[in-house]
Image 1: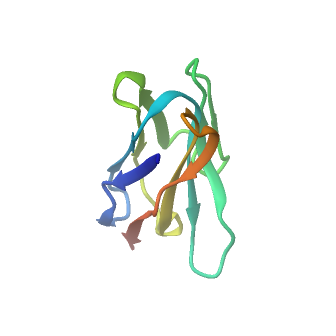
Image 2 (image 1 turned 90 degrees about the horizontal axis):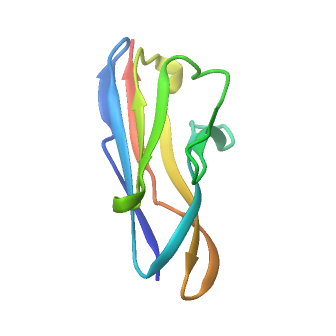
Image 3 (image 1 turned 90 degrees about the vertical axis):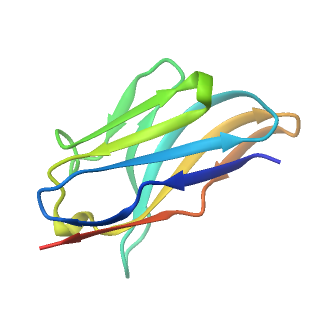
Amino acid sequence: QVQLVESGGGLVQAGGSLRLSCAASGIIFSINTMGWYRQAPGKQRELVAVINGGGSTNYADSVKGRFTISRDNAKNTVYLQMNSLKPEDTAVYYCNAGVHSRSGFLAVWGRGTLVTVSS
């Protein structure tokens, strides 16, 4: 069974920074795209940033220039460096990965980590 575990969330003041991590565990042959999504209270889950196996990235317009996604393939881990945080970035942040495992191709989600940005 493949699992994703996020860490690094917390409370930060506006203008501050946080770094989220998401580590995949289990019997993993390879991982395609990894990404971060977020869901604010009363809103739908939305894409924040994704990175493919070759390192190409894509960002939501709302975070461009402030957030940076990266990955360590040797550790099956994806990171999200968040700078210049705003109160509107407050949300539960979820990690997602396309994993080739013993069970075939799986789209796996983490349980989420809460980021709260105070004004």
